[in-house]
Amino acid sequence: MNVQYAIKAGTVYVLEVNPRASRTVPFVSKATGVPLARIAARLMAGEKLADFDIPEEPPVPGVAVKEAAFPFNRFDVDILLGPEMRSTGEVMGFDDSFGMAFAKAQVSAGNALPQEPGNLIVTVNDSDKATVTPILRRFHDLGFRILATRGTQRYLSRLGLPAEFVYKFGEGRPNIVDHIVSGDVRLLINTPLGKASQFDDYQMRRAAIMYKTPYLTTMSATSAACDALIALKSRAHSVRSLQERIASVAAVPGA
Image 1 (spheres, rainbow, N blue to C red):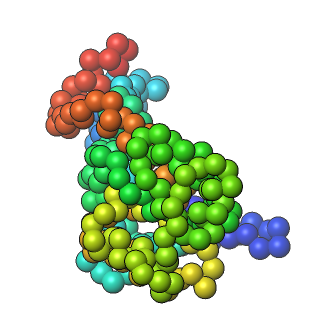
Image 2 (spheres, one colour):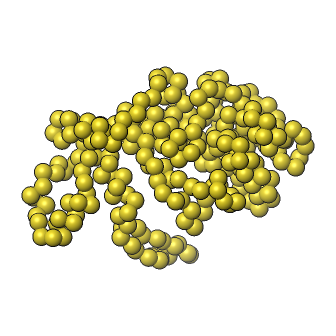
Image 3 (cartoon, rainbow, N blue to C red):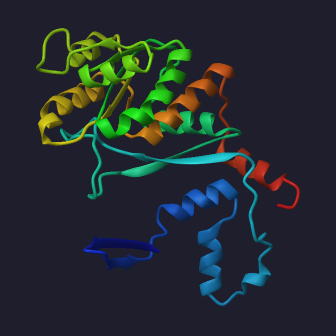
């Protein structure tokens, strides 16, 4: 079930409750190898759940990551997310580790992470600065050169993390958009806050889409991307068909 809530003055309101099987059920079925929709249809036709040989906890030999797919490269809309529905579907990345599974999901969603280190541009709001710092240390250890806007660069420098200053769009040249257009940006990290930054940040994010620069707009995705880059650096990724994956699930003892 999909439940939508609203909270006002300490009171929780339920806006709507909908049965939602069109996206989650296929993902779980592929991850576990259990055809949930087929079984549900047979149950509604009168068969008993006990007639199906389904383990109480279906094994998943690895990590499955679901990533939303967005049409940002086709429509002139901002990539920042809000309460409105913008995704046009989901993709799935599967591997033995979370990092590699996340990397595969990003490739499938059209936001492939860089294979080699290079320039990483970061501009985050004040509430994310403490969170992003240890993640950026990991990126630095991977060989990335960190470029940051004024406030972020000062914060990082105070904590001893090497970061070079880069202009925001409209502040001077060369700015973030110039760097993206020239093709020397491997990764963009941006978590804006407030109306004052909307126009400049919008230009930056649109440039990232137009010039196919990988971008991250949340701290959780930034941390996951770092795990993915470490996985990509440690070994070559492999690809299997869905049929091969389901066969591997069936081969797990107790499956």
